[in-house]
Image 1: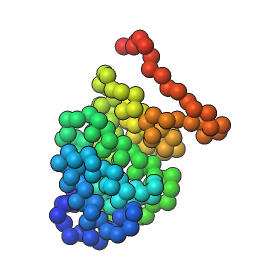
Image 2: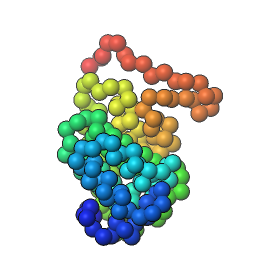
Image 3: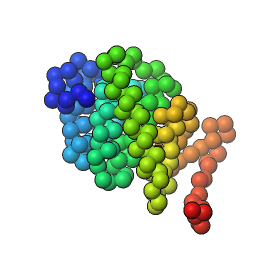
Length: 175
C-alpha cells in the first residue's frame, strides 16, 4: 500500500482535479475515524462518478479501514465507496490503471467482497446498510449497472418508467 506520507501522491491525478496529496490527508482522517472527511475524499476519488487515478491507490486503504474499524456503518461506507469506484470504472470512462497498482487493487477488491459478504450475514442491519452492501457486492461481481442503480441505498426509481420502488422490510424473518 502506498504510504500516506509518500511524495508519490503528488504525482497521482485526483478525480476533481489536482493531485493526490489531499486524498492522502483525507485517508488519514478516515483512518482516524473522522467520517466528516468522507465527502471531500469521495470528490477526490470519484467526483460525479468520474474515477480519478487516486481511487486506484486509495481502494486498498479503504478496505484496510473497513477491516480494522468496528463501527458497522463506517465500515459499510468504506466498502460502498469501493463498490462505487469499481462500478464507475466500468460504467463511465476511467483512466488507465498503472501496472504497479493492479495487483494490490485486485486483492483489495477481493477482500472488500469478503468483508461485505460477512457484514451481510449479521442480523439487524438497517435497510440502507444492507442495500449499499448488496450494491457493493454487485459491483465487485461485475454487475455494475445494478450497483449504480442501488448505490443510493434508500431511493429507488425504475429506470424505465420513473416509478418509485419501495423495498419494505419483511415483518417476520424466516431465519
